[in-house]
Image (cartoon, rainbow, N blue to C red; front, top):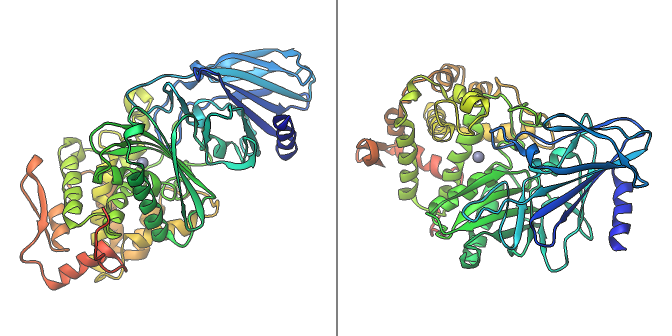
Length: 503
Ligand SMILES: [Zn+2]
């Protein structure tokens, strides 16, 4: 009865209504999509990729038992003109409801975009929600039919009784879901609720107090970096906990993330979670034009992934250091690890950071690989971002830096504004660092080659010693006071050096 009332409210609120019902054994999920059709034919399509993961996947082959019905329950014809698309003839009906099921893949050893274990189902929206062709911008609702003894975690705006709203399909698809028996914890940061929904083989052994301490630290430090308030109503960390080497990571969303997290919860775990959270600004909102609104039928083409992924990773190291989670030694290890990763790949001499981004869709026989064409844009973007940051600081006597560019891009893209064009990053460097920064940008971003790491680090009083696995970054004994001052500004910005580390 409550559900019927809620669905009635949903239909009054929006035009396209989704219903999600997991089976009692959590082995399948049934979805119904009700579309006002006004008697017109309806085409519904399942995405071929998930934003943030630049790989074409075959989600549509997993949908079973696709059936369409009119409001009176009579069946309507469904054809399947493309592997990802179903065509429905409503035969004059004013609305059609398309129903289908999706089996749950039980993966015991790793986090999946659509996965489960004995007690949970977890999925990302693109792998299960059909969209209505030419109507992705319409508001939608989703009603979850979940037994009262099971939990539900999703960052959409709640109406009540398992009903949630989304302003459009992109937001619906960008809001992953965890259903079942999972561990949960909550914290409030700057007035906004945050939830951890922890599943996975090691969930019962995860130190939840430390997980909350880490995630709260990330939320507060990154929100402080970008401004006063985080750009969402509520946030969900969907965490798969594993007994794996220290580390974390996953897939970013605008008000949540799908993460794996090691029981170790050490520095690499901090960086991994900080990376996914930083993305809710850098890539989900600060983005190239091709990264939202999305074309779900093909991979996007943008030369900015070195910035959107690699510089995100750079800040995922720098911000925990700047705000006191770990000290200089750990940060020097991060710098060295990224330099080693760049130098271990001879393709750096053939493929520029821009090209590794722009051509990622050409890898893997045109299916993409989500880390770059020939060159991995994560460490490459990390090192390139660091070199450019140091260059801005050194050229301007510490007055200007990379943070200003990130914050200017945030001003440009926030509040739902469009993504930037491909020339914007270069324009920003010229604006902040002067006309000569254009040539520097062209050399380090647009052309392949060995980045001048030693030269740049020397400008902030750091030395690089050793090669290969023995490469280390240390403080130079001959650093001048000016170089040390630049380094302090780089590490801590306007903040004073934290007196006590929090890690
Ligand atoms: Zn990322």
